[in-house]
Amino acid sequence: MDDDAELPEYQIFSILRQGEEEPIGPYSQNQIVRLLNEEVIHPSDLIYYEDLGHWKQIREVFEIHEGISNFVDEGQDKVIVGEVFRAVQQLFGGSEQVFYIAVQEKGPIHLGPVTAVALTASRLLIANHKAGKLEMEAHLWPSVASARLNRKAGQALGSFQVELYSGSPLTVERIPQIQLERLEQVANEMRASSR
Image (cartoon, rainbow, N blue to C red):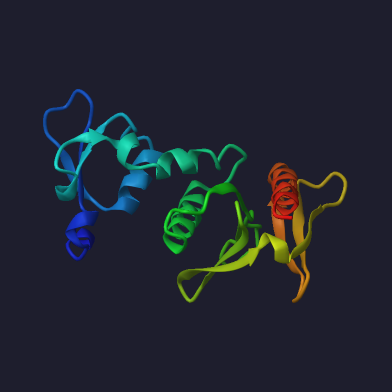
């Protein structure tokens, strides 16, 4: 795979699927996550890279799939959730526990990139694509005055509104109702526990 040729050696992985004798690959971390999400490979399959020294089960090496699968129970786009989850892990060195990720639903005339909201132990993050890359707007919980949902009766989508103690309010539109309710619940739990 040509796009892997430029990656550092530690990001190149081989996979040995259960019941097979020959490994497949090489794959990058992003490709591994995609293959897991598409169920081409399974967390119990084996993975190898040079620094690892021996074959291990994917679930022992990649906590990412386990983490991502917790956030797609309510219709979230797996690709976007995976991208946001990895970005949070990279930004905070894996020290930030992600509790929930909600993903904006694209509408029939929605031309822009999709926005996501990630809730961690210490931050509320708004993830947007700008100029082809993912940008994260982070707010520590003590800076969040309120977090609430706003939807009209009978509508499947609503908005998530965040008031900050200083700064402009934030609104993310077109979030499915089930995600909105969970977003509001988790956000308010995080706000309360940060006091």
